[in-house]
Structure formats: C-alpha cells, structure tokens
Image (cartoon, rainbow, N blue to C red; front, side, top):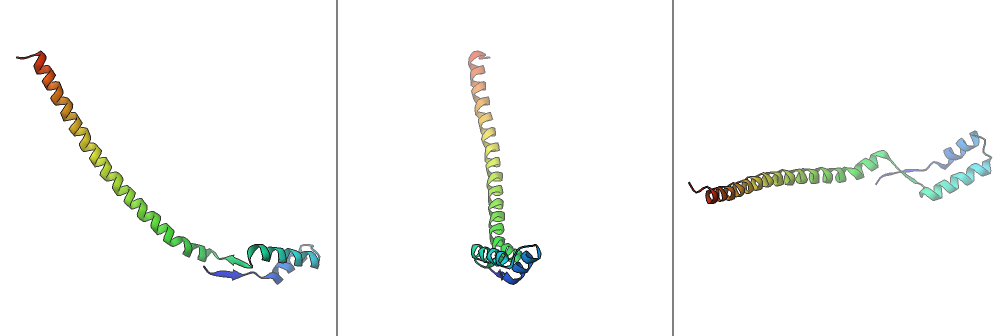
Length: 100
C-alpha cells in the first residue's frame, strides 16, 4: 500500500498560526506522528486495496444469483410434481366414491 509522509513542519506551523505555542505545536505534532506511525494512506492506495475485494464480491453476487435462479426453477418443477400427485390422489378418491 502506498503511503504519504507526514509533514510535521507544516503541522507545527498550522498550530502556531492557530495560537498554539511552539512547544505545544511540536508536542501535538510529535503525538500525532507517533499515533499514526508517520504514514497516512492515500485514497488511491485504498482504492487499489479494495479493488480485488470488490471484484470478489461481484463474482460472489453473480454466483449467488445463478444459484437462486436454479433453485427457483427447481421449486417450480417441484410445485408441478406436487400438483400432479395431488391431482392423481384426488382422481383415485373420486373414482372410489363415484365408480361410474
């Protein structure tokens, strides 16, 4: 992942311009640099890192959609088969009660 170096001088100057003393600005810059590891991630680096994940998600979505379509077809076939079985049972019951 590409990173951008942290500009502590600019950071200190901005704090001083905002009313911090030189010691306060330097302490804040030092604390921030320690907390961030002196590296900030660029947006492009994040996009580059997320790109394969997005591709995997799209492929997974496509596979799930295909499976869902297949299952819908199987369910439709099952409904027809169940309907035929019920119709056959109904025909046998009607024949038993109404032989002519």
